[in-house]
Image (cartoon, rainbow, N blue to C red; front, side, top):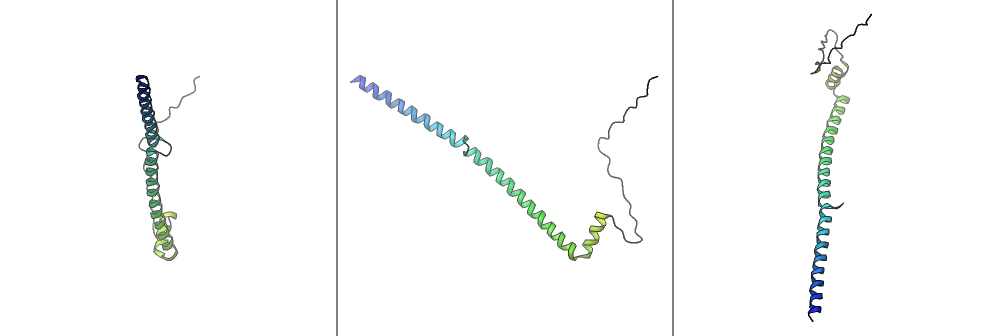
Length: 117
């Protein structure tokens, strides 16, 4: 009788151990798996980034549409664009162009080597 009791308690313990290991494996899979919690968080963050980029591109597109409409119908906008982009001037006007800013770290001067006799 005690032999049968020992077998059933060992079977019960082994069954509990198997269920515990299976539960741990499922939890790990749900967290770290291909479609797990971490993957879901990463995808949500990527979605949020893409939505921000989309919003920025829509705003830029709206601005370009407005500029396009202005250039088609507004003479002042046409004149401003011609002055800015093509450096056009009205008769009698003078343009002064300033040199562009020098780089922060100018390149080091080269040392010239003289040929040795």
